[in-house]
Image (tube, rainbow, N blue to C red):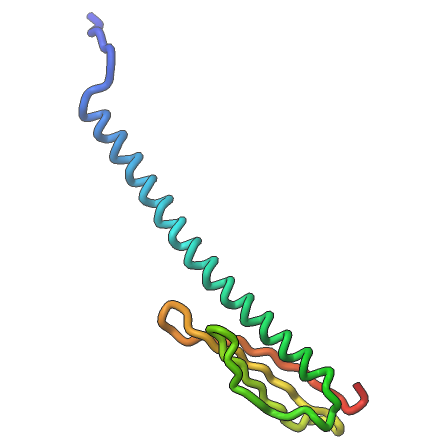
Length: 119
């Protein structure tokens, strides 16, 4: 004999809701992690842009006028640069460092290049 089944039992509904809620919480957790990652990536991109801007400013200066400097505050960022004699004759190593704080910890971005007396 067949029983007449016309719907779901309360246990089946509760199990379905539990599975749905677990999935929903997992998606919410992934969204929070994505938002944090985006904020961190934005800060690194801004720091790289500031470092590139300072590097370009230093590279257009005459060879004899390039010197170490900083720190210079740019909003939440601190920019400093170090100019050292290069390993080859008539060269200078330029290193630009951008520092900031994100999520309570210190972060930094560093870029370097070589300037020759002829460029």
